[in-house]
Amino acid sequence: MNLGIESETLEFKKSTSELKEGLCSICSILNKHGAGTLYFGVNRKGEVIGQQISEKTLRDISKSVAEFIKPTIVPTIVKLLADDKQYVKVDFYGFEKPYSYNGKYYIRSADEDRLISTSNLKKILRNELDKNSWEVEYTNTKINAVDKNAIKILHKDAIQNRRLPNEKISDKSFLKKLNLINNSVLNNAGRVLFANDKPVTLKMAVFATDEKLTFIEQQIIKDNIYNLLVEAEKFILKNIHWKAEIIGMQRVETPEIPKEVIREILANSFVHAVYVSNTTHEIDIHPNFITIYNPGQFASSHKPEEYVKKNMPSVVRNPLIANTLYLGNIIEQFGSGLKRVASISKDSGNKISFENLNEGFRVKITRKKDKNVTLNVTLDVTLNATEMLIYNLLKTDNTMAREQLAKKIGKTVRTVQRALGTLTNQGYILRKGSKNNCIWEILK
Image 1 (cartoon, rainbow, N blue to C red):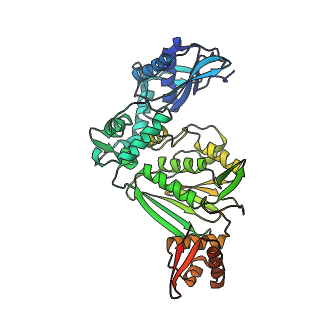
Image 2: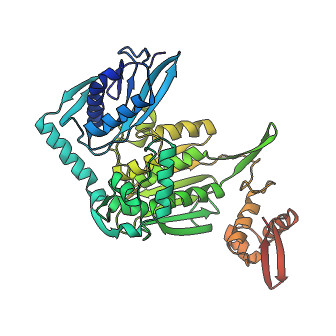
Image 3: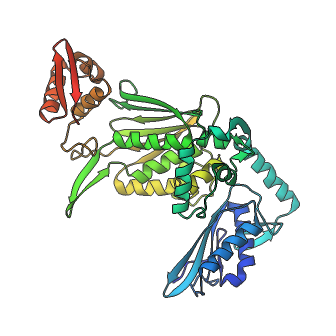
């Protein structure tokens, strides 16, 4: 098996007898690119030659990384097998440049590790201080004001996905490990991620047309990033079409926009936002497309389309937020998110486009036009567009009269009456009360 050739982000070592050289490579790659991969049991040509690997081997690598690479990083270390030959893969990342190995600073040049000059080291320090200054500023929010449940879930996910070691630590120790707290006070990154004082605003709406005129449903939620990501995903999945198919003996339900695409774009939206007072994220669902907006222009000087077409170096506006979401498996990899969602969307028949605005960045995802879909996975029959609009309106306000519904969706009263009849006959709603005081009971 051949793994290719060494590069600025990829290093091969014949065995863990070259552990010190491997650690030096980790340091140099971090300082140049912020993430990379190191293999043990692979020669310079990329051929897997193998070595004996025990659990102690993996622990020794982890211990050496923690001891000699500073600031501390948390790599993913796994044992792999190819043609009956064992080898080790070490994936690593870091956002706290500059990194040192055994007290010295290195940087990657092609496939070589070179000592950083004093002038270049100062330059890296200045750049990192400018980039990371907002996140590390401390707030008035103390440890007792954090969302303990959100921290518990994220910590559990990090362990399950082998992005953190399986150990029991306190909330305070966990936040300190992620550089989100000093003594008992959260910094800005820690506050927007986990605080209970609702530091971030999310506005979500479903519109009757492709213009932002008449909305069927609207929600404004204030919370921390972790909880808003959950609510945002639920809102989108609830308000898009799902296709139901019988495969074998099982019913399989598929959303018109893949979940992976929704999650990745949402996560990137919160990672790359500019967090100031009155920061508001926005999700708009229209009949033919969805837009996801975050305050703060695209973080890189390159265009988003370049990240789709090429292998571009990752630029992260809020590295501490990004690191936390990566550990929780909310972000898969750094620097490849747009390329991955574009590829998945192309396969699923959705189209993604990007718009850099004066004060923010917006991603637009087209919706598929498939008649054989239902509004939600809970619905068993197909409704047309008008019936779905009215159904959603009644779920929001079940006291609306026919005239109100007609005005909301821009249709005639007769059209609304036909739709109400269909919804009633198919068991979605039930009319109660008098003619002048009607209430629609939602049955599904």
